[in-house]
Image 1 (cartoon, helix red, strand yellow):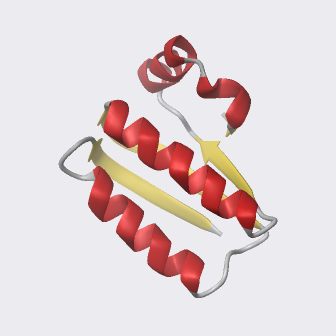
Image 2: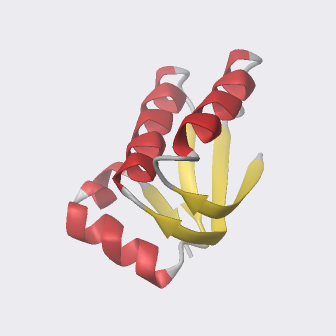
Length: 91
């Protein structure tokens, strides 16, 4: 299953992002959950935290979280902060 995210993933939007994906996971997690980030224009620490929390919840259900189409600027932020080893990233 692929979910496309657009706009900003920040302190204002991360709670809504987490809540909506939490609803999805409560109904059952697909074997692989792909988050398409090509439409994300900005991410801050709150957005990264939401992705990290999502990865933990997906893994608890023996599923895999993949970040896809990660914009170069966002990829750089993820690399600077250091959680790249925690994520599967697909170009």
